[in-house]
Length: 147
Ligand SMILES: CC(C)CCOP(=O)(O)OP(=O)(O)O
Ligand SMILES: [Mg+2]
Ligand SMILES: [Mg+2]
Ligand SMILES: [Mg+2]
Image 1 (cartoon, helix red, strand yellow):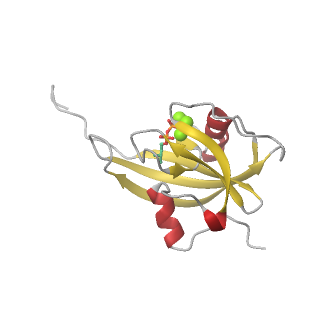
Image 2 (cartoon, protein in one colour):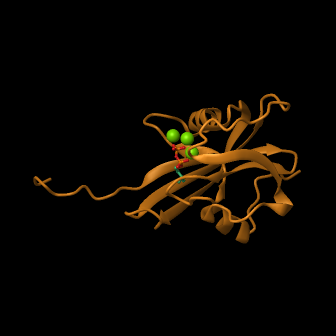
Image 3 (cartoon, helix red, strand yellow):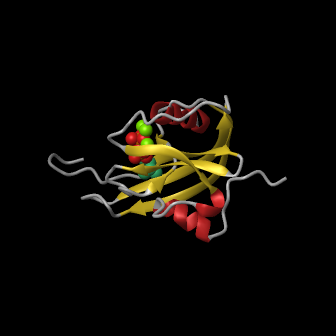
């Protein structure tokens, strides 16, 4: 690339996790450029060489202190965000999981990036939601086991 040219922004991979507790899911209000103040799932950037499941467990642990089990990939979305100074493009991998210890309580380990984690009934989720999640709900998506 010639000197002084600016790298074109490239799509990055985001991994987000439906941590399920009965019919409830763990959400936190984001404090970040992308979707600031929207309710979002725990998760974050896939790091080099990481599996989706390992990233899910790492990000949930880093952000909430929770240990998760039965981690499985549910869905992939392709999302262009226009919130920042530059648009950002994410391939988002959505996974579901359950608590390794059902009695473990979430902690807000990144208070500069999230207002706090809480459990919300699927049928009465708080708004505004992280817009890619809202879009999935409008399309009838849900993260629960079909029994
Ligand atoms: C925007 C999202 C799909 C990917 C990035 O998630 P994030 O901002 O929570 O990232 P980190 O947890 O890695 O800081
Ligand atoms: Mg993170
Ligand atoms: Mg995150
Ligand atoms: Mg991260």
